[in-house]
Length: 375
Image 1: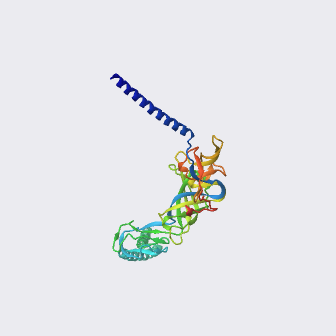
Image 2: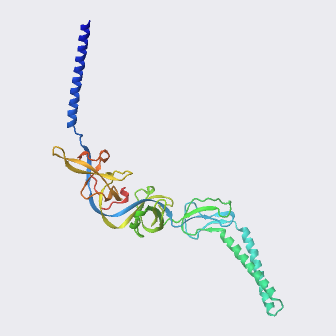
């Protein structure tokens, strides 16, 4: 019995030893393979950083505003007798838009004019009598005061009659009317919006560090998704006197021609202020930039020798300071040298020191004068 148990234990030990030997051999093989294993290079596309002259372009979001724009309202209360315009139509300065009922004021004016005529006759008689000292000076003063009061009343009623005819203060396009004929309007009630559409203002803001690059008269371009494919051009006409203390932005205003009225007040617009003088910039494709909260960077490809002395390509990460953007390309103000090869596609897969291989493919070529419409 003891002999059988001993033989069983010996067999188990031999089996365990065999298993351990096999696993140890496999582990040694894996260790040996790991020493010689190399991560395959990552396929990328590269573009050479080149120097090109272009005018700096500062992009922002703007809002269209009319040079002249008001919501017309009545100054005196009254019932709407006639509406002399159609919603959305063009009107000229001085055109009659609304007439309020003025029968009561006309009757009062006739009475006031009669009283003024009588006061003038009384004043003439009183002056003649005063020359002969028939009446006292105080009676003459009373007649003169009455004549002035009646004349002032006539002027007041004439003014009230004029205010019952509402005219366009300037040429422009009216909006949708907010009144109906027969409606009684309290003083100050809104009637209709009137906007002058040619030219128009474009209001936008840029960071305070761009202030030294801005000057009145520089070219400004604007586009809007409401009029796809059209580029509106104008000039910078005003730079605000102060910087917003909350955003540290400077408010700007450009003036643009709008002969067909395509731009409407309140519209969103993509605005580009273009510097008048061209400067040399190192430019790269916008796809080459890795944007991050701690700083923007690019991957640069360079050649190194491996442990066997064979040359291979690796990437190095460089932090850059970006300048203006033109179409698909961006200027690099600091952190990159002309001629360096930057990764233009595939950079999201990379890390510093990663082995890379350049794939064949179409590379972006910068235009000599990119336009905002290329964005």
